[in-house]
Amino acid sequence: MMLTPSGRFATGTRLCLSMSDFHPESWNPMWTVSSILTGLLSFMLEDQITTGSLQSTNEEKQELAASSLDYNLDHAQLKAMFHTQLQAAKSGSIQTNDQSASAQPSTNSQDDELSSSTQTGPIDSIPESGPSLAQHAGAGAHHSDVDAQAERLESMQSGDPSEAQPTSAVPAFVQSAALDMLQRQLAEGQPEEALQQIEAALKHHQSQGDSYSNLLLLKAQAVAMIGDLQAAIVIVTEWQQTFRGSSVSATVSSGADDATSWQKAWQEAAEAKDAGNDLFRHGDFTGSLQAYDQSLSVAPKCAAVYCNKAAALAKLQRHEEAIAAAKQALSLNRNYSKARRRMHDSISALKR
Image 1 (cartoon, rainbow, N blue to C red):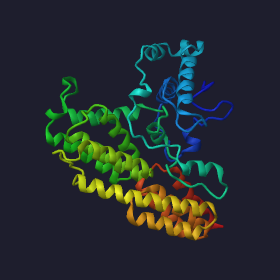
Image 2 (cartoon, rainbow, N blue to C red):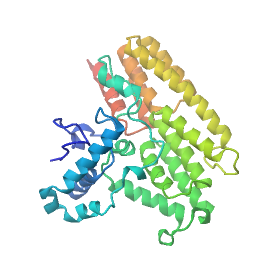
Image 3 (cartoon, helix red, strand yellow):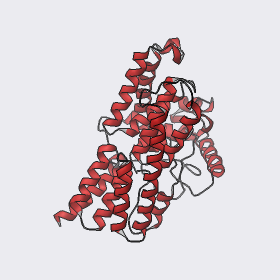
Image 4 (cartoon, one colour):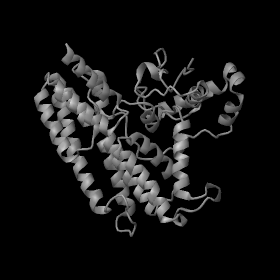
């Protein structure tokens, strides 16, 4: 039983804990019971807020999250079963909100509000996905796989972890290998996995220098690929404020020129996407389709827009094209469960 009397999720509602039921494409049959329980326990002991789970202010969420954590720490049955982990939580080893990274993509976007209030069909801003995006947005979930990946990335970037090397002392080829790994993940449609590792690496780098610069630019690309174009613009703005006019080397791009062009393209794409969402909400599916195509013409690597395009095509009974659009979304974000559902719905419609 998940004990969340307040804060993490609204009380009196069902909480999905079964990946096999709701996210079959993300379920790993090799997960052990202990791995699942460890992830569940880490979720219960987190004091980070779960963005968007409650209709409340940030201050209220923080207060509720803290009370929920206190409730679990003092629960008799949990004390009996997980004494060691509870002691670790009480000692302060659990990460707090103040330690979380800045410029997170918002999960309380206008599009998310639309998807919950309209009956004409859900429109995406930030894709519904597996646990990795939930973690990125501030929800504590299963950490073991992510921690292992982050450790591998850190070891590539910092040489021998036991020596606590400063970033400037890391051999250039080691940093390059780590960046290549992240870029490969983006190319293979794994922006959520890359984003988690980028977040972990950013915490261990100085706010100046080549590595931090490259990680910020990769973070912006990953966030845009997932679908939060406005958050990607914020990250690029942060990069410009930090590195404009400096001699830092941007391995993953040509630096300021690319950052400026990305910012301009993402802004134009976001405006077209928002226009498409408004048209979709008012039943103008042809108009919304044109707006989504306009958005993709300037930002072709945005999974959420392809998913929205699939929704518009399905409304127009153009299911073969909807399947193709959903597949394109999945090629950019393979964990995108909503795109997978759109594809399956259109396949079913064709069979009928």
